[in-house]
Length: 367
Image (cartoon, rainbow, N blue to C red; front, side, top):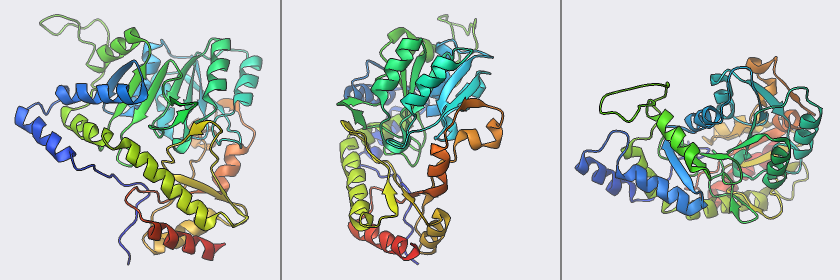
């Protein structure tokens, strides 16, 4: 049995233990501390975001964004249907109604055309849109941002998977009213768990910071006018993040190289198609995602598992989830078709060209 090749395993830079030791030496192992500040600064410097807030998850960041924007029970919030459920759970937390918009085949991401159609025809105007940059690949964020502006809809970018991705030279997560990044165990940058909320609006980030620390008023005792949450990132995890940020461009380059290897070894097969990259964008290729025209992806997945290689179906669309069976939206079948045909293949940055070749040989044998 081969040593297991994971879908996207953590990959440390070598500096993380040194920084964690500094945390322990200072005894600031609880939430907040110097490394939390350093991590926030590193994200701002890298993405050009004006303000950043380190949190314990990207889901918490989305929740705070909706809370700060005043999304409440009964409001409608648009969202990508082709995404992970963490992208939309925060809508439920606020008692709002998720409205799902389908993808386009040119990007696999939310369709600007369907978004505009829904906003022109809907009876009740949504308050916000949470748009996902799927698998680290940018959506047509310029068009989507303009549509939201014209219709008076707040824009929240779920960039959980896309740290390091750009559109027209600008980082995903910095086009909207808020952007969100994830540092979960399998992301391109991992702190084992964590997230970051960014925005141009300093007052909004400060309000989110207030909510994230139990909404404590500025008194020597604990005074509360509003309710809040325990959402801040620990200084220990932030130290890992600081070490990871020192190699973020190396990780993006390696993810993209892995994708090119897959394309080299499988690109001649007519029934295999890869997730596209929009013109003038640079995806981080967090996961290499592909579709098979005539082969069941589960068959391929099972064959890879036999050689101890992890793979995963594409996200099951949110509109097809039992939890959201009564949700409204504008669906044209694009994401359903991609889900039925698609697979994410192993994309860990520790992989070698030989690893990818071995995986591709197994895939070829199943077609």
